[in-house]
Image 1 (cartoon, rainbow, N blue to C red):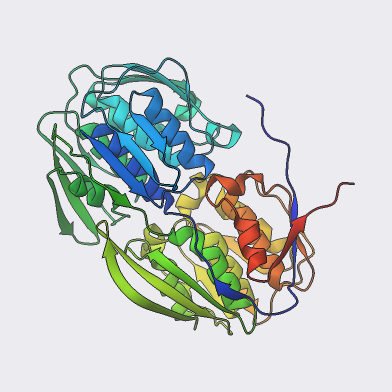
Image 2: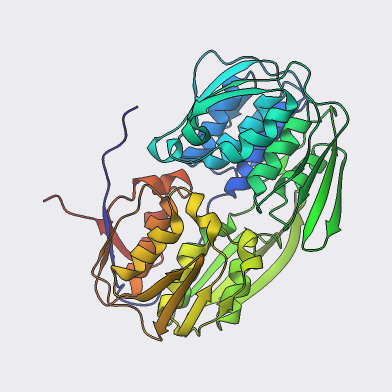
Length: 449
């Protein structure tokens, strides 16, 4: 499979503060699930605010290949005519999930309990990511998997003809593994039970209820036990997708770091299992105000007002990781500009994201003059109260969040920062560069040599 040529971008200090009111793309996690649950429901689901990045479009294509009717209206809304639980059809071709680990892992759960054969692949980055963590529990449904070493894609799946319900304790905090097990349980009789030692984002549970499934959640210490009654008749239900807090993180941190900035980001999802970054930034002294709090589609939503200012160091505990697992690279940028030593603890999950994000984040900061250490699974950032020197070329490793974090760093560093390949930003944040430049940023294509 051919990969696109690298698209380097360079970011430098803007001529003044960032100002404006912006809309960030729809929440990626909720967008994936809206398409999948719509495909498994009876009737037509209408989706407003769906993220149209490449990751989610891959999910839409996969649902079409499995027999659902997925279409986009002229006004930007989406419609999904579902097949019902157990009604998916065998795809005629390989399912290409692009760069999306979420889509690939959740789809493993769906396919495990449907009696059909499918083959899944992805881009070079996704083909390097381990899938064993979802394959291992799903084998107990009766499904069969054939993959490369470590459970890596391409992956062939033979779904169980008479799937068994699962009772699984997730060994590490992972919303993707939990969701894959729950999705497999939809087409299995009896109760599927997931015990997670640490609470992770609960979009799957919320959306299962929204579509009519019987889901029970009990708090168990720092974690939760989720039980799902199998073989429900999911009913089509309209979904309003809030703005993605993980995408909002980049203009948010940029507004905090560029002196004098004032930026408003409306309609952001504020699920408490997703707001760890806001908690951390407020501990660092950030001026972030939430207005117009409300609930839409079962998810809490609000508008954010951000004012630039100085930040101080903080000690970030490991138990906060599940609520901000995608935001550590941009939090590290904020910490590099803060006064004092910030310690980000318990980051082992970053090693199995789109890249080894722990190593990639440390390298991003180091090459731009920040003083940083990685001790075990902790990242220690020694801030001086002023931005790093910059001037470095960041290896993004096909990771959109490393690329966007590097470009935000360039807005405040003494010298411009280059991201060696920013083409993958569109997987989660189409229009990122235009949005940032519309606020007053200075991001541009690197001239050809």
